[in-house]
Length: 337
Image (cartoon, rainbow, N blue to C red; front, side, top):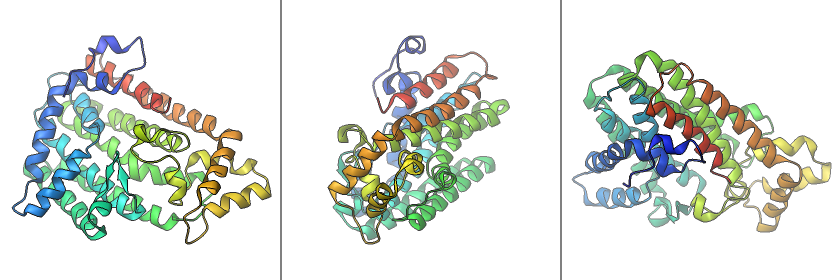
């Protein structure tokens, strides 16, 4: 993994992911290698599926945050490599199950497991990933860390069940949307930060967990925003996928009160049972979101969460790690630009 910019270099411009990774790039190399070892099995088919999954691996944003939080007070704890692997494997497991539930065919520009093989493989491989993550964290022998891993896997499962319950239903209460993204996204970002604090900055555990939660909320809001105009090359899946899958996210919820009865009927057509909506129906809803201010409203809420994430860092000592954690907030907000 290439070295990113030095911490001081990311103040004067919008940071890239490479700049965020720069301080811990050697740790990320270790996480990648360690993941391969944790996921290796005696069954060739498991190794084949696992290899495909690791090619779909993201940018290790959660392990980056874990390692940065581990450095918030000084010398890092070497358990960060194992913990980073655990967090990323849990993340992969949630994506595998998510793709199967949504019947998605692409993830980061590559075929999903359910597309390349079938849903049975996706379900069992997701379970395998969760079990390997729990086995690895149990090996460390720290009950606090095990409890955090158990809690977040429970949160992710609850999030998936809530999403299934909402499938092709136009749930108009934003509170239910925020509950969903708290469980499905923010919980794992918060856990990564809290794990890093447990091993490296225990005095700042509460602050760093709050930072991770708020950053995770902003992250998901920006992700949902990108579905209304992001390029497939950036998102790894076609724009409009959430609407096609019958998911109502905040950009749409923000404009619902401003729509006429006729416009509301056109929105409800997208969520009709049985779906999916046609390309023309989806395009109409996307246009309504743009015309009625849904993009701007979502950016405002994401910026509010991001600002509160930055506030959570105010009690941390000055350090290169804190500087990069602050820059990560700007990186998250800039992803849809």
